[in-house]
Length: 471
Ligand code: FAD
Ligand code: SF4
Ligand code: SF4
Image (cartoon, rainbow, N blue to C red; front, side, top):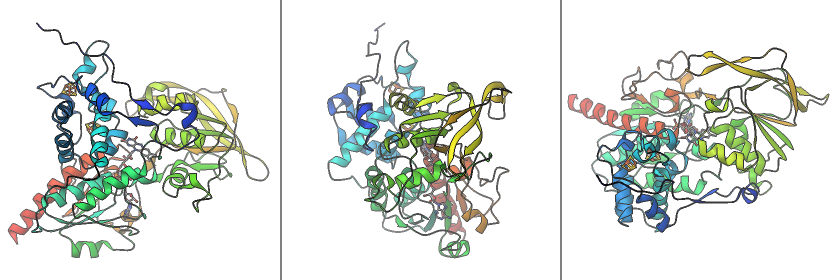
C-alpha cells in the first residue's frame, strides 16, 4: 500500500511581530503568498468522503476550491468559494476553524499532523480575487419573484439577503447603525478583521442588487405593520448585542466598561484614532478584563494597543473551558496578556471621587457539570484577594437586542428572550416572518449565523413561491 507523505505542520504564515503589533491596529496575520498557499493546498488529500465539508455550516466545496488553487486556477477557486459563501475573506479570518472544518480534516487526524489550513487558504483566494480589482458577479435573474425585508445587516442578514438576491428576489436590508456588517464592523477589531475587508464583501452583496438602508431601526423608524404591508416575507437577524453585566457592587464607578461599549467606541467610532476621530476613549494603565471568549481577547488586546501598561484577564473557569478561538488566545499570550484562571470578581472598589482603584476577586474551583455541560465554578470561601486597577472591561456575554422584539409582541420568544424559530427554516411563530443568527441561538459565531441565513433564504423562497401559487 502506498504511504502518503505530507508535511506534518501547516505551512507557516507571516505575522506582525508581537513587539511591533502591540503599538498599532494593523492586521496581525499577514497572509500567504501564492507559493505558500499552493504548498498548503498540496497537503490536502482530496478525501472522497469530504469530512471537512460537513464541518462547515455553509457546506463549502472545500476539496474543490483547494484543488483549483493547487492547479493555480485561482479564478475557478474563487468562483467555487463564492458560490457557497458570500463573505469568504471574513470567514477565512474569523471562523473558529479548529472546531469546524479543520476540526474534521483527515490530515489533522493523522498522528502528529496538523489539519489543512482551510481558513487561511479561503482568505488567500478571497483576497486574491479582490486584489485583481474585479469581482466575479453572478448573473442575477431580471424578473423579480417577490420582495423581502431583512432586519439587521450582520452576517445572518447579509447572507440571507445575498442568497435571495441571487435567486431573483428584490431585497432591502434595514440596519440600525450607520454601517453594515453587524459585529464584523462594531465588535471585531481592525487588527483581526480590517474594516476595508468587511466593506469590500458588503459591496459585493450590494452589487447583487441588495439595497441597504442604514440608520434605519425596524420597530422605530419603520414599523412592523409597514414592513408586512410592503414585503412578501421578513427575515430578522438583529443579533445579540445587549451586554450582560456582573451586577456586583461598584459597577457604577468611573472606569468600569462593558466590552460592547468599549469595542464599539474603538471599532465603529474609530476611537483608536482620536483626536482625528470625534469619539474619545479612556484607557487605564492597569486594565482587568473579565471573561475569556473572543470578546474578552479583543477587548484586552485593544486596551494594550491603546497604551495600557498591563492587561489581566480574569476568568471564573479554567483554560480548558475558555470559549475563545485558540489562535486569538495564542496571540494574546504572545502580546503579554496575563491570564488568571478560576478567578471571579466580587466587588469593584473606588476612591472618594468615584474612580475605580481595585477589583476584589475570589478564587474558584470546578464542581459538577452545569446545564451547559461544563463543570460549574464554585467559590473557595476565604480566598478573596484584590487586584489594583484603574479600568475594568466586562466581557461576560451578550443577550438579545430588544428594540425590535418589544415592537413585535406577536413573536414567540424562548425562556431566555431569544426568538423561537425552527432550526431548519428559521420560521417563527408569525407567518411569513423568519429569523436566524444570534437573535435565535444567543451569542454564537459568524458562520453559524451565516448558515442560518442560508437556510432561511431557501425557506423564504419556498414560502413566497407557495403563497403566490395559491393566490
Ligand atoms: P450581528 O452581527 O449582531 O448583527 C445584527 C445587526 O442587526 C447589527 O448590525 C444591529 O445593528 C442590527 N439591528 C439590531 N436591531 C435592529 C433593528 N431593530 N433594526 C435594524 N437593525 C437592527 N464569531 C466568530 O465566528 N469568530 C470570531 O472571532 C468572533 N469574534 C467576536 C468578537 C466580538 C467582539 C463579538 C461581539 C462577537 C464575536 N463573534 C465571533 C460572534 C459573531 O460576531 C456573532 O455570532 C455574529 O456576528 C452574529 O451575527 P448576526 O447576524 O446574528 O448578528
Ligand atoms: Fe471553514 Fe468557516 Fe470557511 Fe466554512 S466558512 S470552510 S467553517 S473557515
Ligand atoms: Fe482535504 Fe482535509 Fe478536506 Fe480531506 S478533510 S479533503 S484533507 S481539507
